[in-house]
Image 1 (cartoon, rainbow, N blue to C red):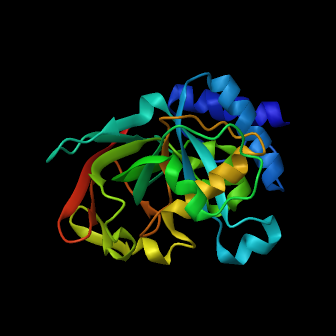
Image 2 (cartoon, rainbow, N blue to C red):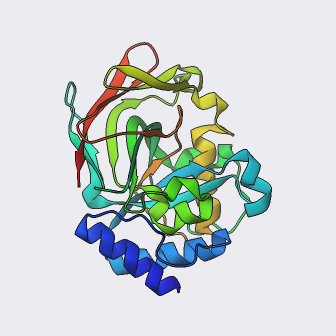
Amino acid sequence: MTDRIAQAFVGARQARQGFAEYPGAMPETLEEAYGIQARAIALFDRPVAGWKVGRVPDALVERYGANRLAGPIFAGSIVHAEAGDAPEMMIFRDGFGAAEAEYLARLGPLPETFDRAWTNADILPYIAEMRLGIEIASSPFAGINAHGPAVTISDFGNNNGLLIGYGISSEEDFLSWPVSLTIDGEVAGTGTAGNMLDGPIGAVRFLFERAALGLKLAEGQWISTGAVTGVHPVQPGAKVEARFGPDLRVQCTIGIA
């Protein structure tokens, strides 16, 4: 079953076409879901250039035993935004598509082993830089966000792209910055990173903990640390802008994969 589900998701991504029904029995546990994801990564056979981190809804944390989830970001889906640009980012036809304002961390040289207890302070020396960005959450499965974190994990964590914007200093108090995401000029959501569990660094720490279980982190990978203002569905042709603090912003338009 794991192989069949993984093949269905990879085939749909390669064909760039969505579908309405989950391709098999939905995973019941996060371990089962990560097994499907690992098989799909092998079948997709593209370099993993980063990882996205998402939040498990509070009401489901006890059931699944985790408050975050992870999925791969592939090299061909990462775009660097120049000042004033609005590059096109892709969602799946007849699938699910959303945009998320996020803080991004790039990993520097990593420890020889991850098999230890980690704190947020322990993580800081391994982060080479922080940036602003937009994650494109998109899956061929139109209902991916309606069935809980295990289903999300099973299709690459519902990721289909990462837009990388301005760099920020670790000395800046970015945790308190107001963040907003607008779609076609209308505010879709607001928030601050300081209200996200234990913040962006905590999201990286979560991946270090997953690395001790086999997740493959590497120097230079980008980490998308979680949706600051929420997950906001988008349609083809939409213009998306994420605003951070008093005057920083990154924007894109939405296209069909």
